[in-house]
Amino acid sequence: MKEAKYLIVLTGVAVVCAALLAYVYKVTAGPIEMSKNAAINEGIQAVAPEFDNDPVSMMYLIDGQDPLSPVIYPATRGGVVVGAAVKTVSKKGYAGNVVVMVGLEGAPDGQLRVLSTTVVDMKETPGLGTKAKEPGFAGQFQQLSVPPDGALFKVKKDGGSINAIAGATITSRAFTECVNVAVKAWREHGAAALKAAADPANAEPVNSGADAVKGGANG
Amino acid sequence: MTLLTIIIFTVFVNNVILSQFLGICPFMGVSKKLDSALGMSAAVLFVIVLSAIISYLLQFGVLVPLKLEYLQTIMFILVIAALVQFVEMFIKKASPALFEALGIYLPLITTNCAVLGTAIMVTQKDKIHNLIEAVVFATGISLGFALVLLLFAAIRERLDLETGTPRPMKGLPIALVTASILSLAFLGFSGMVKM
Amino acid sequence: MASTPLIKEFTKGLVSQNTLLVLLLGMCPALATTTSLTNAVGMGAAVIFVATMSNIAVSAIRKIVPDEVRIPIFVLLIASFVTVVDLSMKAWMPGLSKSLGLFIPLIVVNCIILARAEAFAYKNGVIRSALDGLGSGTGYALGLILVSFFRELLGNGTLFNVSVFGEAFKNNAVLVMILPPGAFLTLGLIIATINKIRRV
Image (tube, rainbow over all chains, first blue to last red; front, side, top):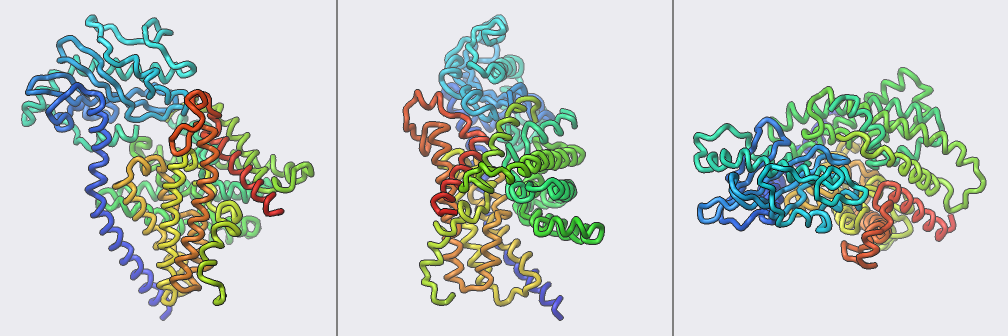
């Protein structure tokens, strides 16, 4: 019966392929998981003040239901809060979401300074919006004191002091918004984040880490 | 983000052929004449939308719950191959003339990057949130494909009669350069809507 | 056929029957993944792997695969190797995997692989088929590298991300080259040049 032969060969090949893939999947699952977190870890390392804790394990989502919610990674040294890395998303990018990891120095209720920033993901125009990654623009946010009166950073066009990228005002605004949201997040939710990290059993329910990481990695 | 935004995004801002580079082979092959371009577009629309629906359901109904996401490529391409077989049989019965006109290009829809590409894209949860959006997205992709195919067919009917084209440029190279200009024009839509 | 020296099976795919520039197959990735030489080399390597492995696999089981079900079998095998590449890249080359994005899984619909399996591997021995796959894959990779050479050099002023013309050029490079129109233009002009050389 010819049909039987077809079925046997098809099934045989399918089974062998499935077995091969299951094996490769098992072998690669670990490294894949690690590389997902590596991007976030590198971002935190690059921007946060010197710390000796594990910010990712102390990660705090402001709004578990919102995949674009800011994520706070508190940084401590010797048990004392030195600042945080905050991952924020701005929907106001030119061609998509702009995701920035902002490094803040200082406790939530004290004097704050933006230490450094790094772009986690953006889809902006190459050569224009992508200049936001370069020191010419991002450098303006290095070691930048945060006004204690709660005033926001703004681009010059909007009355502020940040020089926008020539021809990429929208991207510049989105990036600036990310910094502002990060400061606001740390100010308003920093204490709650630290509390949750210290006392995980009684913390507010937070979405599992994977969504936040994925949300960031995919912009 | 509304359904209208999705349509505008997929047809103009992020056009499947001119921005995403999917579906180039059939684009170059079928766009020579207006009527085969039309027939192709209709067949592609049908296959892309149906395969997007099936792929979406397959991904979130079977692959994700069973943690078999790594089988996505295999399952999707098999679904598409089967779907194209059905479409072929259907067209053969319903309109033998169209079947003749499309010829080899019908089974080639299976290898059309746009079909598999769309199936994969609708499973990316951060862009597409439910089945309705997936259907609209797939429809938008097909409409974008059709738009460019028809635009191009109109241009190419003229181009091939043109005797001024240098010999090395005839055929594919001049078509690619034309596509380059079309793509440049479509770049003007960038930033109009976001997804 | 039997008198063709083995090495010819490999070299024919490189120039005279170059998959991309002569046979004009697999254009989608040639436009999408050639924004930089690194991407092109990564993509080329992936295609070489899949083309060679699937040719070997198809050739190895060609005697037991009935004619009527050969296409689904080819697709199954090719898709499996593509998945292997996809998972491996995600695990050990995540940056490249993200840059190439969709186009790694899309290798499965790259016409050359199915074409070589059908036209050659199904009818020839394993060693020859392996060389044939290696040759067509490498030829394709060379095509990708050629396109991306021009695109990255003119569009970014760099080769493999190393600045060639200096910072001033980099800030004012021909941006359109790394955008979609530049892709079509570069590929079109390269094919035209090849046509002229071949006196087509």
